[in-house]
Length: 196
View 1 (spheres, rainbow, N blue to C red):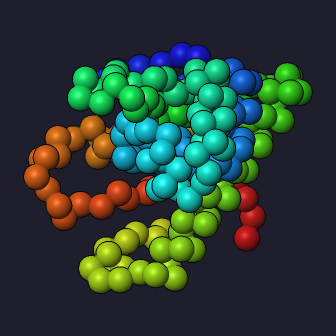
View 2 (view 1 turned 45 degrees about the vertical axis):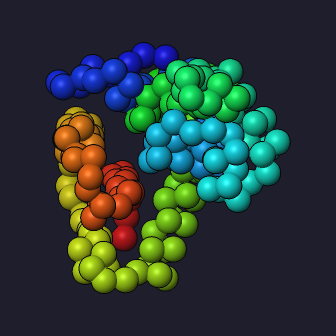
């Protein structure tokens, strides 16, 4: 796996996934949820992840081990005040991949499509859940865009890089420790050739 080198690179920021094992790990819904929970809430214990996601502790342990073996999760530094609890951390908070990286390798292409399908399903579920339970002020400020553009392949690639940088610039900014008005916000963009 390679680390991306954005203009303002930070350790653990974004990783380009280029290994089938990592994609196969992400292609499972429970593992996808675990990665999301660690990205949003930071380092966590197996028990805390199980409680937050409503999944049996044994199942969480198994899926965390798969993510460790795939190089996506590591054991977090131990808290000296509680040496009994093992904590887990993401290697990087963001990941990206493209079909081009896996072209001509059947198993890799299949793993990339499966991972994309799982993530797309989760994005759809989150959006639907928000729409069903939206409340002020969040329903007034949530963004929904629908655009048709005419682009060539190079322009689409450029748009993708610009969207990455926009989202990452918001994630990289300093946030005060005592701020209680912020919520985790899920942003995603899919831009692809299509017809009405």
